[in-house]
Length: 341
Image 1: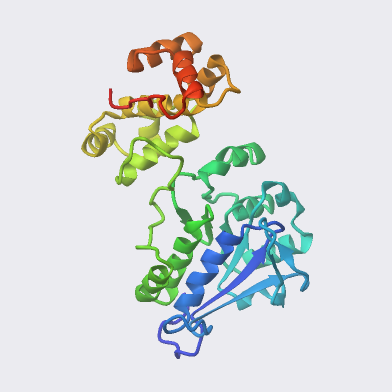
Image 2: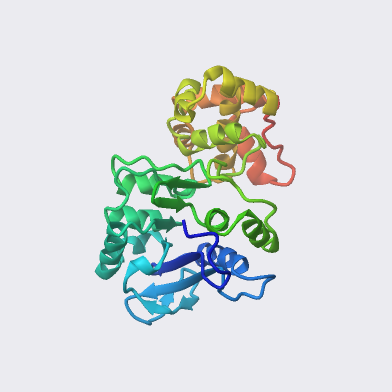
């Protein structure tokens, strides 16, 4: 951490950005805007309390996934001139195409003790460079399965907004980039500067590292972080749904505590809530006509089509096929799955 008593014209936080080909523009923009707004009074954007540069092999523009291109401000050089190196990833099929000099630069930064930050699929890039072994890593729930496929034996964290593990910091991208940037601003400049940045960006308050990712839409809404994390674990493993005991083990809490939080937040025990989420996913899949009932059963963790039909009919008094016909023939009048019956 840089000296908080340093003169006001001395940057307390210096960040270098490495942009991958087809990087996610919103992840980069959210991160850098928090720095910009924290660096000066108001929104005058002068790089006083913190500085930021896009660095690269050369000044050639790097095109984002949306087509907007950004040129590097500086060549790679000595990584020790920065307090953090932030790798901004993007499209999955570009991860393997990171230039060798980027990887060499990141290894030199790690050797010199400069913390590395992976934003969006930047965590994938750090892993591919061999720089995340022994570290916990945050990835988006959307890319959870992609990560498992590419990095056998590693266990990504996809139920939290960001992860800080010593000198490796990772987040899932999007809005979480702003929260991770605010965490760094809070650490080096102060809480007031971090809150100011987020408020100007119309973000109510900073999210902590252990706050859950928003995740997929749920009929079961809860403000309880423990409940939301448990439901996200289920969503990420829908085809082989974990038992309550397995979720308890993942969360590191007692079964009694999890049950108390579910009852207070949803008025349901965890097992019942888990079943309702799976049935909600069944309904979403039934709204499409490209999957058989057997396929839907397999994707939502039911033993077979007969098992799904029996549970679905018990809860809705109709069969999945009948519900599907009603929806496809008249989607406006089709009755939704009542999760409270």
